[in-house]
Image (cartoon, rainbow, N blue to C red; front, side, top):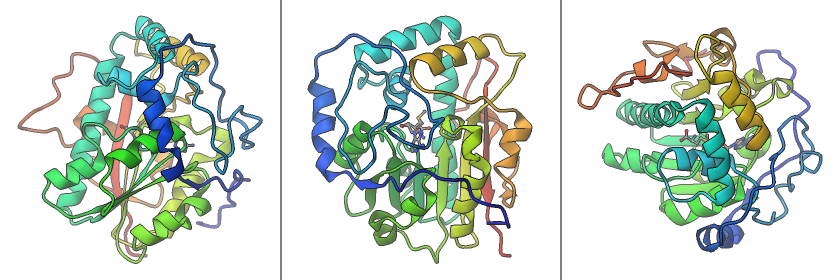
Length: 318
Ligand SMILES: C[S@@+](CC[C@H](N)C(=O)[O-])C[C@H]1O[C@@H](n2cnc3c(N)ncnc32)[C@H](O)[C@@H]1O
C-alpha cells in the first residue's frame, strides 16, 4: 500500500454471472426503445445513491439508458447497441467526429499490448473494465499468439458480464461482475482465486476504464492496491482519455458523454503518469496510444490527433 491510506471504498460488490445470462439474450432480442437521459455517475460509493443496483442483486436491463460498453461497441462498429445508445453516440459524434478512429486506436493498442505480454511470457490476465469480449478480446489475442493463458474478465455492467460468459471459453476464462474499485472483493473473489495464481506474474489490464473513476475514489490508490497484490514480474497495461485542451471537440464530447452515458474524467499526462508510480515503464513509456509499439505490418494510419495515452509497465522485484 506504500503507506498510503486506502479510500473509503464501496461496499463489497462482486457477484457471479451465470445467473445473468438471460440479460445477454434480452439485449440481443429486445425491441429498440427511447432514451431517457442521464445514466448517473460514479461520484457516490453507494450504488443506490448512484441509481445503480448493488452487485449482489440482479438489476433489470434498461435499454433506454445508454451503457458505456454498448456505446463503445457501437463506435467500434459492433451490433450490440440499443436505440438509446445510438442516439447519444450520434450527439457525441457531432461534437467529435474523430472519436471512432480514436477508439479503434485504443482497441488496436489493447491487441498489441496483450500480444506483447503473451510473448513476454505472461500466462494470466486480469482484464478490469473488460467491456464486451468481441473482436480483439484478450482471450482471442492470446490464442492467436499461440499461448495457453487464463483470463479473468471483470466488469460492473451485468449485460457485459452475461454476454462475456457466453463468449469466453470456460476452461481458460472466468467472468466476474464487480466494481474494480472494490479491489479486495475482486482479488478475493472465488473467480480470481480459482483461476489465477497470485504467486505467478499476472497482467492487469485497465484499458479505457480509469477515466470512469472519480478523483474522490483515488484511482492511483486503486491501481496501487492491485499492484501490491501481484507477484514481481507482473504487468499493468492502461489507456486513459487525455485532458488535452488543444484538441478540438474534446471538452464538448466529454460533456455530452458525461450527461448521456457516464461521468468521464479527462486527465492530464502528469495525472495519468501518477497511476504508474511504483511500476517500471516498458519503452517507450506513456505515449499517445498509436505510438506504443506500432504494428509494423499494419500500422494505425491515423489522420486525427489522438486523445488517449497508453502505457505498459512491469512490477519489479523489491
Ligand atoms: C470504454 S469500455 C472499455 C472496454 C475495454 N477495456 C476496451 O478497451 O476495449 C469501459 C468498460 O469499463 C466498465 N466499467 C466502468 N466503470 C467500471 C468499474 N468501476 N468497475 C468495473 N467496470 C467498469 C464499463 O462497463 C465498460 O464495459
